Image (cartoon, rainbow, N blue to C red; front, top):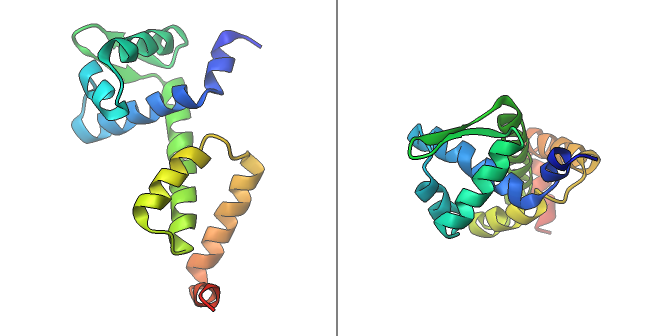
Length: 139
């Protein structure tokens, strides 16, 4: 297994790619300071990971100009965003408050297996299409 594919499996790498994706969507650009603020790390820590991500082909970075995800980086980021969204919606449908659902989804999104996520997504669709079943949970 090469280093780049091992990097893909790290939750921290996924957190960075997800944060870069959201910042780019929100602001149109991403700076090291924005990223370090979003992830609550020191700028040198963010810079070191940005270098690793660039070397791994996940993003293009021009010092003092910003960064953008490559297709590879965007693909990973979108996968994380989709996992987070599915898990967040599932927990919210179960009645978990939004703050807790968000925090729990942050942890679960990195460790859920694709087969499990597909089953959760199916259950979310069913719950959306049959909201009366949610009332059964409160009994």
